[in-house]
Image (cartoon, rainbow, N blue to C red; front, side, top):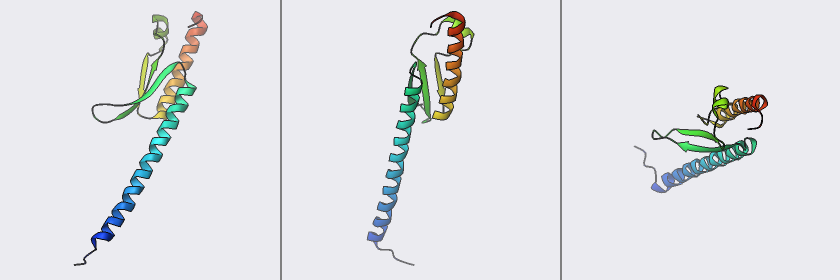
Length: 109
């Protein structure tokens, strides 16, 4: 049986922990940039990230103005939720097209 000095184990654990922390920081920074980009691209929506009771992270957007019956009739949703920022961006692009078409056919929002 090989005996590994405790100091060597601590050094390896420390290196691994630093890698995990650095990776988490990069991930958080990326999520922050994605959130900022979505907020700047879709100013008509309140955009955020939420964690549900099961621990799943959701990217959410809530329309800042109420959805009228006419807008709802063409498919405009007051709130959307997606599992990642790319899916949310796609959904918001579609919802923006619906809002634009509703505005074009009914006048200003």
